[in-house]
Image (tube, rainbow, N blue to C red; front, side, top):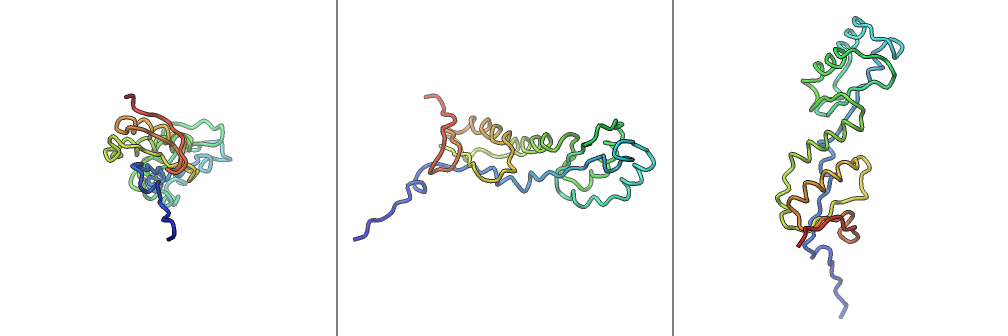
Length: 169
């Protein structure tokens, strides 16, 4: 008789929390104001308004938007306001700041709204080693939320994980 191969990982009480499940909702695109400036540096109100009005904003449909400027131009606050107002009916959200900062903010909001109750008193592995588009801040944020409910938190894969935290006995 052949030995039966058991999948001990599948039989274990470990729950997997996969941040990649949030990937679609966390898509962030950026708007670089330098593209709307004369020579990438000079803000001319009429030309700026005309470009913003004529621009195709469909790329931001349902996505989070980071408005920033990649040059050292001096930008008046109304320029950010004008683009934010234009995107308000198109984008999921609009923030001013570098792409990485806005991406972290979006992940933070998504995780704050997530339901972690299914991990109540469970051993949880925060899945890692996957998509590089998940910022490190999201892993830390997920850990903080899971500490409120989980018994133990690990990082990696259920078959090969690194212990991160355990509720004191």
